[in-house]
Length: 381
Ligand SMILES: *Cc1c(COP(=O)(O)O)cnc(C)c1O
Image 1 (cartoon, rainbow, N blue to C red):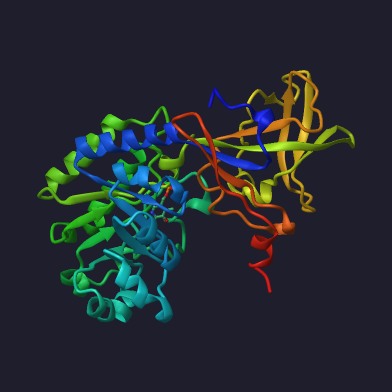
Image 2 (cartoon, rainbow, N blue to C red):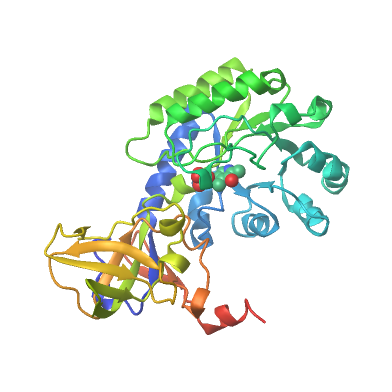
């Protein structure tokens, strides 16, 4: 994004996705597909900037959707494979989901029994899958651990119903979060130990998401080996990966402006964005977002607590230091804010949603969507 003049941005806050960086991630995922034979689909839950989907579609096989709305977006904006999973489907949505999906993933045998015939009647060629819980996880954070105690996500082997196996085309698991291939190997071992009897009658196995493939230290060659070996053990079975984060990982920024500087025991800068509304994982995970040109508190000469423009006391990005004092109007650039950010945004406090923009390969800023009062009003009554 070297050609961009942040001082000249027409407004903030603004997410700016850099097309070349997105393509770099897609290219790596394409390499994995070619070398391993796996199919990669995008988990919309983590990244759904559909203005980029014509690019994404050049590399990936389609999308994985978490329900009706994501499935509709996948069909409308990418129109490749649509795999739809929900913890539970609903009577008033299942018919449309069946019509527009290539693949439906039930969470439990009871959901399978409730909807299998209905789904097949509407869409006879749809693939049917069950999400299983391999009861193995090394996920670092409970909030993001699908295999934790009493997890509702997926069917454990104790609750598995072998009666339905003949009607299943696939098995899905999703057990990882921001993890490397060693964690996948652990999950696969547990999955094969528990569900091994059923794998070879399936057309495919979906390894879920949470593979931090595009992170620099991810062992891509090992992933390719692991997938190849799995396929070799199981008659060349089709393998899917459905990453979200790895697609949007380090593909862009959130730019905010300093609105005011105040003092209460320390220097405090108020920004025109919000950790709560625009960077929710910084509070939920939690993690500290990187700010371009900043250091830890007291590392550089001028330290500030950065806070959001809402009335939530805890709407704080953290304490950061800078070489120069901050001034009203200065731009603050939060790194890596493209995945799990705007897909989760809220209009809490009526705060303006950040615009969505693309920094194109031709080095042009394309503001794809600007939000306003109506977006706040229309979600209320
Ligand atoms: C969240 C999720 C994904 C994507 O996970 P990432 O961590 O973004 O790669 C894939 N599959 C399922 C079932 C999910 O819930």
